[in-house]
Image (tube, rainbow, N blue to C red; front, side, top):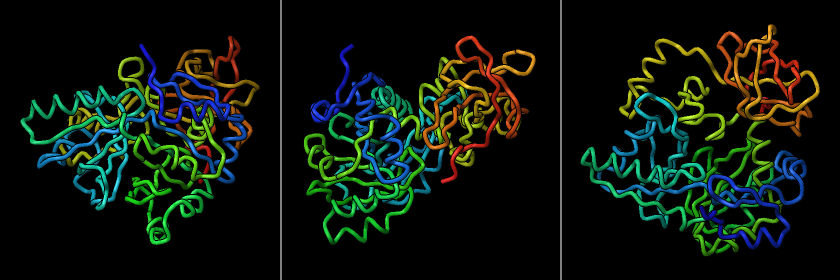
Length: 369
């Protein structure tokens, strides 16, 4: 299958980026080094091209009802310009994907009421899901997959706001400063009509920008900061214990519900959505495993798929994400473990390249931002 490419693929290539396949896209994984890019975000600012993320627009008289019934959070609580993190679950309450749902702000050039962002490679699947359920339920809503019409960038780090202020017109500087967490605004960035939101995947202050595909370069070049690839994005999000779709949960290979995945706050059981009844039972009965953080005490780096055992060598779980934390200078990871292992400081063992390495459970996030 032909890989999709972001609009600035050539720009990144000229900058010296190395690339990797991710969710069917050929994306920059590294520009300089993962550590350099990671530290820039923690200490200053960095910009990521995340145009591999999907964009689905939903409009029409029943747009809110359709969004409410297909995501776990309370879409009805949103006002124009607000966003929320939510899960997309099947009838059994298993996470199909996680997403951010925006009720688009006044003045947006998007011709829709809602925008939601599936993960890389999931846009067609979620478009089909929305359309098929809309038709099954007889709802009056228009669903459009606009992934190939927009680029998405993330400017993250302590200096992100200052950089964005330099890129917008003077009359929008107050708008940027007043933009709170999970709020979105329509502003012109480098002369390009854009949607900005105070959201991100790094644990730092920052903004994500949705801009027209054919005007992406002007916006990218407006930010004089470290370009960052998916490698640093991964180390940053692991330090915060943030989920990666397809790795920390997968509907077939590693089926998990929101209670197991540590995102129960996204589930509003007083709303109606696909999977609600199953999740109500899970909430009442409890779960046997939950996502836990851990750090290796012995030398080694935990990686996805490594076995986790107890002191007797019996398998109790598997690493879903792991890395050498650039900020903490220690190997850290995530794994689903029996609930009795969830308390911090419990000894477990991770099999790294055939050798059992001592580890201890840690509270999430690893960093307090």
